[in-house]
Image (cartoon, helix red, strand yellow):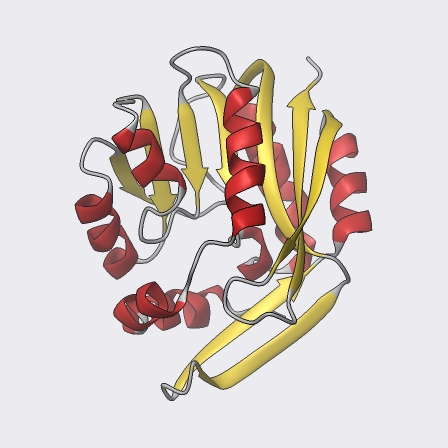
Length: 208
């Protein structure tokens, strides 16, 4: 079981190290660009588990988009996001209870954030995404290909603990459909921290 307090403390303590280690791959950029191209002009975007504000919020900031909001429960990550995406609005909160109103976003992105939520709460997070999206709104979620649970007491060789609960692609597709989304795109992406990692970026459209 993932302990969200452990994850939060880990990202607080590892903020600078994680920022230095993580790199965006070509396939990740392509998946994100394809998703943005599917959105209406001047979309309202929520980055759920925004971390340091890259790549989503920084890209929206560079595009001059003012209607971008980032949510994260790590104070240190949000401080980095404020520097990386100065035009974005940032709020501290939990993905299972998003601190935003119903039906206000055209799109939600959740890149490498759902994997730090306990598996029995993944559906709750997806229900929250559906709640805050407008009818026909889009979601982009990254997940590991296979289900996996893990913890590392010395993540990135820092002595800091990190935990994960990866639902896997099949379970994520099922939960997206059960919470009102039609699957409209799926792309394989290699790891951003290790080359042996295999991820899928699943895009859905809210059918209501």
